[in-house]
Length: 288
Ligand SMILES: [Zn+2]
Image (cartoon, rainbow, N blue to C red; front, top):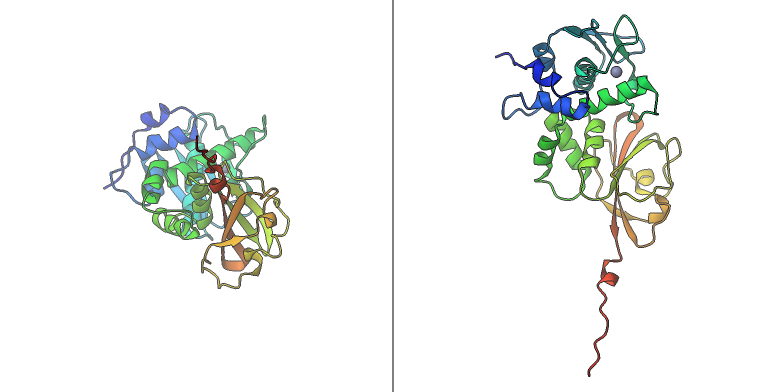
């Protein structure tokens, strides 16, 4: 049966990417697992999702000014998880009333656009790409569904990210970015390529790192020395805090890593305070 989505309810959600995604997700049938992005597109008058080898682009949205209907372009030479992300990103441009295309062809989105996760004030292009990405994450991995999925999983573990990616049919990287902000413990995920940090995503309370984008991962850490085969998640080991952190006094740092295809690697860092015992120190009692 074809999916029915009331576009009025989406219009009522305004321009906030999270609210827009929620307005769609709440109209899906109960019990959906991977979000059916193609069916959603079709239900909101996207008349075609055309797959083609795109030169320098990941995707696009061809749309008239009134956005009454539209067509989505997707790079065909990609994994299904990436295609799903691209479709969700383009739907994000389509449903957002503040997103106006800069060209008569509509929105043309590069791989870089798909990774925008911050925007400087006044940079309208970056703001739209950021919002389309926020929308895509909220549509493909709705907060409530992610919480329900993770409620059965204790602690922080890269295996949870892989399970999340499988369940929601998203890339491991998209799942990892979602996972880290959902954790209730301080955590950071370092995405690297051939030993060089690509970028790092942290949960709000994670202490300041001593590594940043485009520098080598610390030479003596597990992520540099692990010989575990591609796809095999290591155990979490306690790693010297100074390797990764600016200030590590009183903190115990856990490191877990996995090598991925073609030189990519994901590393999960977690911290715990080692000072809790001292805080429980009690004043000696004196006999009167
Ligand atoms: Zn875009």
